Image 1: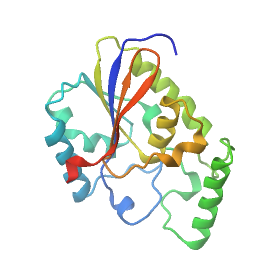
Image 2: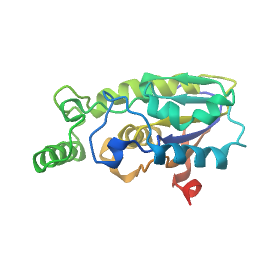
Image 3: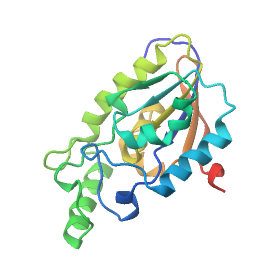
Image 4: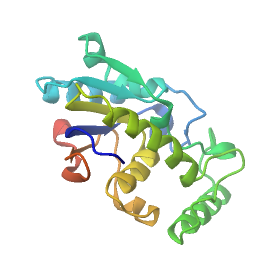
Length: 207
């Protein structure tokens, strides 16, 4: 990446949906709403971080991210949706409840990724490399905005794991080292060349 202005990124996962609660695969292809717990999580995050001078909020195209940061948006904070922040598409797995067969297939996919096969994907889904391509475009766009020093980014669990690897310059076989509970927060500082992790998977707003 070319030399850019320094920034601080607050990156959170969206709040809980009923599909999250019931262990149903969600992915990029299912545009679900937050449930009551998810709405409360978003409100708790807002109450704790509403005094941060965010210059902009970025979300995915999926409404569960919009609803999580709804209070910031209603407050008038500049808002942009980027498809590069969408969740990984799980293809044929989306909308399915966990079964022994599905768990075996999912575990094989995760194993493929752990062994370095970042082109492996489900039927109709996306690979880590494909997600990375759109994430690079999104992050380059965010970093290129000169008047945005502190930004809030709301996105999705698996996509967050891939993004953390990209920003921290690590291979994707480290993705599972970045946990992602609903509304968990990572704060990263960018000095114009490299990212530094300042806050790792914080849930203090829910305590």
